[in-house]
Image (tube, rainbow, N blue to C red):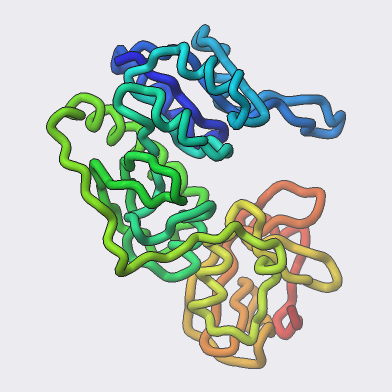
Length: 301
């Protein structure tokens, strides 16, 4: 098929690779424009942009698709279908209607649960036991379109957003290839009204750990916000990101370190901190972190 690919972050790259490997013709790649990054604040292309250049594909990065000129350029590509995954721009109706088979979105949740911007984070933070990927026919509403294909997966008890992100990216790549192969045989499934939830964008204010909450809630917050923006607390006056954890037995004053292995009391139960990162340092496993930054039993976080 002749495809317009629309995606921006690392999550989208395996999908682009899968479409190319499957032999589809990529008419053009749309992504977000390069933006300042790094210490020098030089414009840096997005992961999809960089990969598309490596593949020798035509890359376009308009700041908006609302203008008649941008919409005409899109229509002139005469695509059979557009594949959209974490693109980052709203698609006007003229863009949605331009490809012969419309625009198909790869969404990292089991719709209608977790429509919106942060479905992977929210699934872990809410304690969902299962999530998945949906191939959805896009319409004007926010993730409201009919689902063509879906696949579920269990969320591991210690899985972080980073780990689940990578698994769902590969699942999405496989699922869209299967969907395109059998597109004429797929029956769109209208999303039910029951069970709709919204994965609102992560607010950095959510990232500071409240040790008065239960260990289950603290653990979900740590894993759900890892690696970005990263849950955090203060240890001996220093801000430390908490990137991996698990729920363990233990009790004490909320925020008190219970042993020499970073078992911390919560409002109910305790968590064990497994991976941490000090400001200006790389992420470290607990044992390595403690060698350079010992945290004594009885320390109040």
